[in-house]
Amino acid sequence: MDGSKRRLERLACDRCHRQKLRCSRASSQSRACQRCVKAGERCTYSPPLRLGRPVSSNKQDNKNGQSRHSTPVSLPAPSVSPTVVAMPEPTDYLMDNKAFLQDLEVDYRQGISLAPTMMPLDMDQPPATCDMDDFYLYSTTTPYPPETLFDDGPRLGFDGDADRQLLALQQSLFEAVSVDDVEGLDKTIGLVARASNMLLSIITALTSPSPSPSSSSSSGSPPLLSASHGPCSADSATTTILLVTACYARILNKVDAIASRLHDMVSCSDHEALLALPSIQMGTFIPVAPAIQASVLVQLLSQSVCEIEKRLPSLTCALVVPPVTARGGGVARSNVADMVGAVYGNVVNLEAHVKGVLAVTLDLLSRGGSCHREQRGYAME
Image 1 (spheres, rainbow, N blue to C red):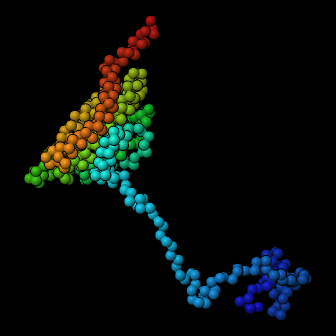
Image 2: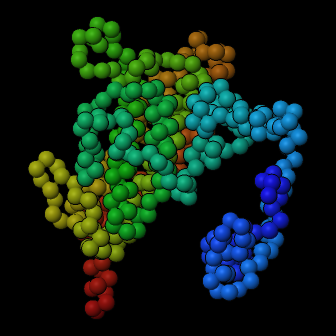
Image 3: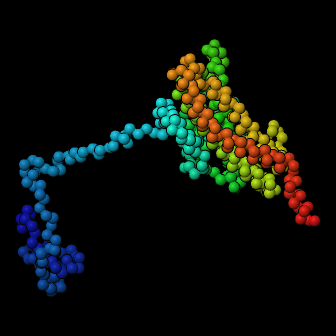
């Protein structure tokens, strides 16, 4: 049978095909197979149910030397919207001073509050991926101990500019941690302590005078900032000041949660929760009484807020350029001051609330739970 033509019958007989056995011819002259001869059965062959693959339509093309498989198919590149291609990353947009300040100035002129855009204080934000222990304001060779609170330590140099440092700090404060359980409260206290130290270090570096070339060459320690941080342009100064204020607002929000939880512990005399607070060591002395630990913690939180608060005006004076050198004269400086004042005005109320809660908690601790004793004495009478 010609191999180029379709086979019209099976190679195996019907009996071997049904039993799925190998079909071998008894002799080259006979069509009967060995199994059918031994069984005395009639050996028949039927046409196959599947007649093979259909003839390919590209055979004619192969004769002409134009096979479909030999020519690669070039697909058009998917069209991408130019708006999507040109869309910057969020960090790049915030670091673009002109675009950043144009939006702020438009919102300010239209009477829109700047608080929702600069300082969203709700805790329903997605958790940040930046770990405070990996924040590169601190040395990587000497890791920051998480159990040590408010440890000043050596102030190391910044590797990038201050705005990027502030953006990373602000992102790390987005993490939503519940302070209702002991583990969450401990974690939040450590987060606030490190964030406060970092923000104070940035503000101090921005407000400190630039070292002279002679002093910087003689000393072995690196400068705090890689570039000079004296008077700068209005756009750059406003960006830095607003980022500092935004970080401060997030720290205040965290302190508010901690202070409210501590107030509940003290007012309800929850000694078990007070004992679970992180230990604060002063030199070689570690207070044993829960009231002393809580008092020290409240005072440290309160003092940390006060230190940041009193450094903000000096930061504005150090960064904003004088009216003579400002672009646009006194009008540019006035716009900067107005925008900064509008943003900072939204922080003042939260700041006063946090200080009030800390003060009430410290007052309850100083009275040693007198309210609780009075309530217990009234019940006994």
